[in-house]
Each structure stands twice: as C-alpha cells, then as structure tokens.
Length: 478
Image (cartoon, rainbow, N blue to C red; front, side, top):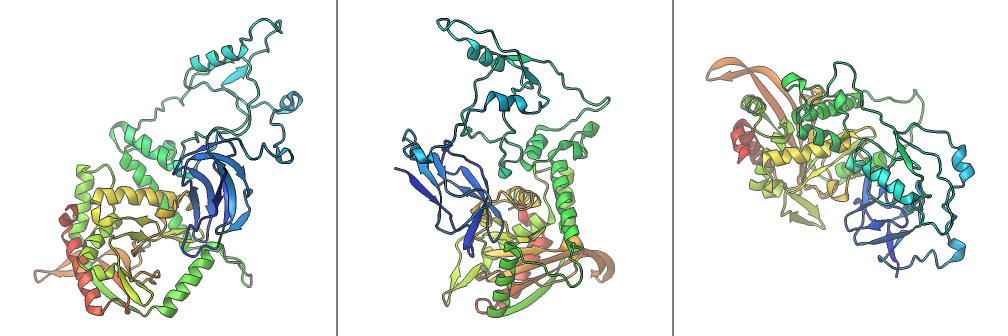
C-alpha cells in the first residue's frame, strides 16, 4: 500500500512550503535519512529528508509549487510493490523512449567518448552481442573516459560536488558500441596544482575550486588551513557587501521576502513582549590573541581555530555554570534546557540565518570549529542545503559583528530564548597594566536578557565567567 509524504513543518513559524527542486524521482529507491527535495521555508531553503525506506512512486507537487504544512506532496510504495500509477491507464506516463529522429536533431556536444557506427544487422537466430560490447568498452575505459549521456548528473547542494547516486526514472535507450578517443589531460605549461588530501576533501565538500585557493605550504602546496581561510574570506566578502546593500530608487516599494517577513514578525514580537535589559563588559583579549597565533604556528589541529570558535566554547563553559541563562520562557513558566545548543547568527543576501551547534557542552574546541566551519560554508552558498536540525533548537544565540569593526552593539533576543550575546571587534587601545600605560587588545561584549527569567546579578556573573575563560584561553582546551 502506498504511503503519503506530506509537507513537514521545517521551522517553528512555517505555514506552507515551496518545492524548489526534487532530488529524487518516481522509481528511485529511498532510504531513511535520504534527501528527497529542497523546500523553501520562511527561514531558508532546507532539505526534506525521508523518514522510512521505500520507492518514490508519484510526485503530487511540481517544482515551484507550494503547499500548506501537512498536505500530501508525494507517494511512496514498498520495494517490489507494483506502482499505483501503472494500475490507472489514464495516468500512465508517456513513452520514455527518445525517437531516433529527435535524437539525431540534437546538436552534438563535445564528449571524451564518441559513438561508433552501428553494427550491421544480424540474423534473428544469432545471439545479440552489441550490449555486451558496449559494457566491455565502458568497463575497460580509463577513469577519465565517459559515455555520452542524455543530460548532466544531478547534484545535491549539501553534498558539494558529489553527484547523486539516485537512479534515473526514465528507461535509457539501447546503447551503441563505443569507440574510445584518447584525450590526455593537458595542464598549462609550468602549472601543477599541489594540495594535501585533507585540502582536496575539504574543497570538494565545500564546492571550492582549488585553482582559486592560494597555497601556503612547501612549493605552494594547498593545505586544509588554506581552504578554511579561503572560505572565511569569501564569507567576509559577502558580509561586507551586505553592509552596503543594493537598495531601490527613492520612492520605490520593496516587497518583503518570506525570510525577511518572518524576521520582521519575530523581532517585533520580541521587543513588544520580552522585557529586555542589557549588561556589558570589556574583555582583555591579549592572551587570546597569543593563544590563537600559537595554535596556528604549531598546527595543533586540522581545523583552523577562529576567535568566534573560542567565544562559542567559552560561552558554553559559562552557560554550564549559569543554567538559567540557557533557558526559555514558555506557558508562564521557565524551562531550563538539558543541552547547550548555541545558534550563531550568519548574514546572507536576504537576511539572517541561525545555524545551530548542538550539545556544545560535550564538544571540544576543535570539534566546535569543525561544526562551525561546515555550517558557515553552507550559509556562504546562499543558505541552501540545511537540514531541519541545523536551523532549529537553539537555546542561546551569539551575534558577532567584530569582522566589520563594530565597537559595541546590543542584539534583540530570539524568542523563546532567555538571552543573546552581542560580540564586538577586538580593538587596540591604551590600557593600564601593573600601574604602567600600555597598548592592549580588548573586546566589548553585551548580553541582552529576558527580565522575566534572568536578574541583573545573574547576567553580570555570567559575563564575568565568560571574561575569565577568554582571558585564560588555555582553559578552552579542557
């Protein structure tokens, strides 16, 4: 019996979703956790995952169409079960074979392997061997040789450059024998791309062309740190572009996108219903700067550690000692969360995303860095490919404006969380050390708190604990 696939609620405020792209097609096998479709929600473009095994039988919604939460968008059947569509002649799909005339009319595209002339007709009694010849040519072809296909392979945005392994829903026309044309790979004279295996894997996962990455290793070899730095530079470039957005002409009207409309509603609700108060401290970052440089010099970890990674780790340690800061106001009561799930605000072209680093109390500093870099890389591709769990469930939020030189600001609480931490830039300024005037590096942080949950003394002690961890950064490795 066919099972229904319905439009899930991928965000707290979602009422309907739009199918941007089907990643599976009728006839494809589906396993639990497989990505089925890209769905546009009020927060971002997210990935709809399968909750059980089966075979995709029918699509009820076309790409670009919307449906409310709970509406049936596709049908699935058990493996081996006859398709419900075949039982209805009126709904039978059109013939999938491509006419010879239509195929001949297509303009030729350059391919590494080209078709050989068709073999002469053989008597009906003689066994047909042409398919076997085609298979043999395919198997024996070098890795860089390819067969001509009907179209480009499908890609999943969360997989970077990994092609989808899903089978096509259309029956392929009979293959002709192949004649392999040797075309050796030619690199520009004097150019040889050198990259470590870790760097190649990181670039492939992030969808980065290594030709654009500057290598800092021996003989210009590209390391994983080079790929991480390139991704951060790209994110920084996009963020700075957002500081000077392309606005319409004076007097024009701009319709709100689904994401911007949701941000407007939730921020208005936050300021209207949550009694905000703010507490600020200045943190001496001199030791943190030395700590970061020491890690980079010794190459202690595979992942490059950023200041934001250090702040996330320090915040998690401080929240563990002040659980009331990791709470929510729900149904006239206070819920103290069992895990510390920190959302990191990331600016994208049309607004903000809040990717979540889950269970930070269990993660070491390098693990936090690895998760954070992966989430920021996804946001850098326009916010597509996130799963539901990566954009929901935050219990505390950090908003960092240090990369654009902001010296001090206060952020708006994300309901129903109890607090949000606003992080400013690390600045050089005159400081007094041991009675002597010196040049130091300091950073201002401000925590916005819900006064229904948190009192000022608790917020102040939380910031003092955060300050203590960041001024003694070796504690972050515990």
